[in-house]
Length: 155
Image (tube, rainbow, N blue to C red; front, side, top):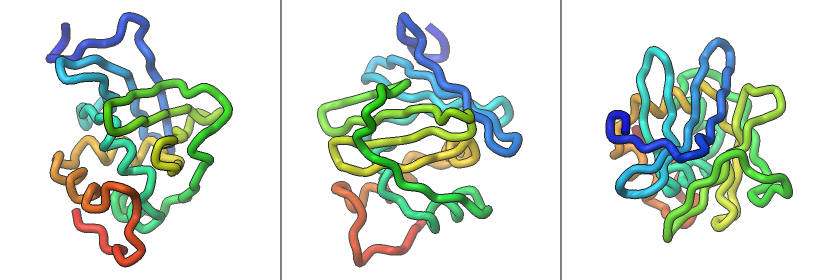
């Protein structure tokens, strides 16, 4: 047991590096269920549950550019890829699948139950470490995906 996080017996881990930003994603078990731990050497770490990860899948290019305060190559992906996910966490409400890109610069993040998928790079994942949990509550104002009338991102 380390700092309240319980790694799975067969530790599932993805390393991602984009433009000098490196993060490690590890599937961990906590007393309240599985999470994806996002860790950066200097920024620290955070744990995200399936719902929080799923909420990222329906965000748009403007959201990601504002999050990292830089230009961002936004891409959507098939929410039900035929290949197996490297990491997957679920709960009674959500499924989040993560698959490392071949070049190791990003992760395909999909929510097959909701039908959304996007690519997130290490800069996005590192930026999430500093966000308070209320950040995800704001993303979940529309818990079933994007609302066509809602194009304002409040951080």
